[in-house]
Amino acid sequence: MTRRRPIVLGIVGDSAAGKSTITRGLAELLGEDRVTHICADDYHKYDRVERARLGITPLHPDCNYLDILELHLERAYYGEPMLKPVYDHSTGSLVRPEYLIPSEFVIVEGLLGFHTQVMRQFYDVKVFLDPPEELRREWKIKRDTAKRGYKREQVLAELERREPDSRDYIRPQREFADLVVRFYPDGDGTDQADSHLNVQLVLRPTIPHPDLSYLFDRDEVRRPGVRLELGRDKGRPVDFLEIDGNVGREHAAELEDTIWKHLPDLRSLRADQFGDYICGTEVRHSDPLALTQLLITYHLLRAYSKDAPMPFARPIAALNRLQFVPEAAAVEAVTSK
Image (cartoon, rainbow, N blue to C red; front, top):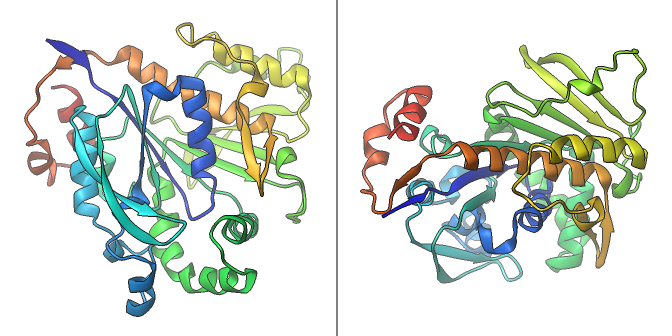
C-alpha cells in the first residue's frame, strides 16, 4: 500500500509577526480537513511562571525542546503519528499533549522552526515573516492586551527583555527562507490601517515561482499597485513582488487569475473568501494578504503534485543518518528515497 507523504511548510517569524494569520488563510484555501497545524511554541520547556523565575525568554533555544521538534518534523515528513505537547497561550501553561496524524499538508509555525540544520531538511517550503519592528511591536501590543490579559506597559517591558534573543536567534533565520514576506505601511508611520498595508515578497530562486512575467509590461506601462522587479537581497539575486495596500481590484484580480491558472486542482475562491485577519475582536480583509496566502498555496500544491507516492510504512532512522550531512546533500538524500 502506498500514499503520498505530507507536504511540510515552515512559517517562522518573531512574536506577533502574523504567523497565525497566514496559517488560517492557507487552511481556508486548502481545506481544513487537509491541513495539520503544528505550533512550535508547544515545545517550550517551561511555563510562563517558570520562565519568569529562571529569567529566560521563549525565544531562546534553551527554553525549547528543539530536539523533540526535530523528531516530530521527521515524523510529519513521513506522515507518521506523534504525541505533540501543547502550550496554552491564554494561561501560559503546558497542558495535556495532543495525538496527531499528519494530513496532506502540515504547517509548522513558530519562533525557532529554522534554527537547526536538521529542522530545515524536512520542509518543502520555508517562509519567513519580516514586518518592520515598529509595526510588529504595535501588533504585539494589540494582541497581548486584547487576548492574553497583559497591560500595554507589561508588553513593552517584555519586548525590551526579548530584544537580544530576537536579534540573536529569530531574525537570523530569515536567510534560510524560500520566501520572505514583509508587510509595511507607507512612510514611517504605523497608524495606517492594516487592511491597506503594502507587502513586499522576496522570491528566492531556491524554489520555482509562478510565471509572473506579465508584470514586465511589453508597453513599459507600470501596473498601479502590483510590480515585479529584479534585485538583490543580502547580496543574492531575487525577484521582488510588490503589492500596494490600495491596489486596484482590477490589478489584484489579474494577479489572482495568473496564480489560479497554476492551481487547476483547487477550487477557485473569491479573494474576499480568504485574506482575513483579526483586529481586536473585528474581522477585516486585506487584498495583499489574500494574494500572499494564494502564492504560498501555489508552492504547497506544486510540491504536492510533484511528490511521488511513498511506502505506507516508513522506518524512523533518517534523523540520525542526516545529522552530520551538509544541508543540501541531506535534503537530496531524504527526498530521493
